[in-house]
Image 1 (cartoon, rainbow, N blue to C red):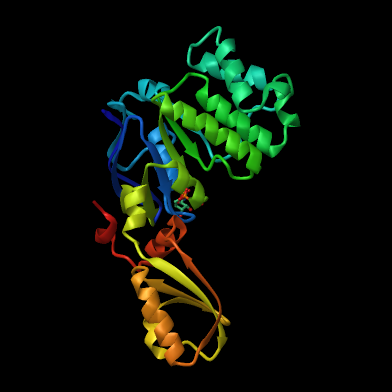
Image 2 (tube, rainbow, N blue to C red):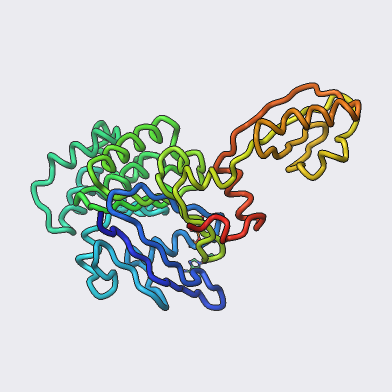
Length: 307
Ligand SMILES: Nc1ncnc2c1ncn2[C@@H]1O[C@H](COP(=O)(O)OP(=O)(O)OP(=O)(O)O)[C@@H](O)[C@H]1O
């Protein structure tokens, strides 16, 4: 498999703010890659550098070998970008908007593909509706459709499901998964960690313009192998022996970290010995949310999660 996107030491500064501090990242053809990070981490800036909307101060970005600055037009053709912000021309219908977008890429007679996209995004009934009369969620679907009109091999989705109802979210992911199955490379930024966990094969996490984790989703989760035990204490406080395991506490509900099932025995013994009653108990697998929160808090060193 070749490289679909290559970010090489990409740096970008806005005044005194270092939005990207030298990000290097290679995404292989056919990957479903998730780019995660808190607000302001630099995700959109990185996507903008890829789409040629922002120019890196240093470093370079290539799409299927094309430099996004030197070979802008060719690189742009290889990309379908769904932007975060709803920008559209209010004077055209959905179908007109998609025909115009096809025209930008020099594609004529694109109606069969446009119909297929409309169908998959559940927009067929709105094809002749004026853009300004669509709801926010519908407009977002059109943005997705617009990014796909020229059948780009690399599809970038910047928070595509923000403000979108559950039904569309499911439909959208089904469609994007299908495109990925057909060989399209997908790069997704999202705040919905569950989404990233179920969809993405590999995940990069950005924090303050730096890549703080980069790994396959399953392996990233494995780094945090171990379980979370949630206890509702019936009586008494948490025994001192268990305090080092404490992740969080809200009233009588304590979340404890366990390295494995075997440790449950010891925890229960400690509770019994301290005369501490347990009203409720739940054992959970680690999830991406927790990995993310711990990384962002800096509880885990960068080296610990980098391959
Ligand atoms: N055009 C700009 N001028 C000045 N500062 C900017 C500009 N664009 C982004 N920034 C700043 O750069 C940093 C990175 O922003 P960016 O939008 O890339 O973050 P993000 O990870 O996409 O965040 P979010 O999840 O909120 O979309 C932020 O501090 C932001 O305020």
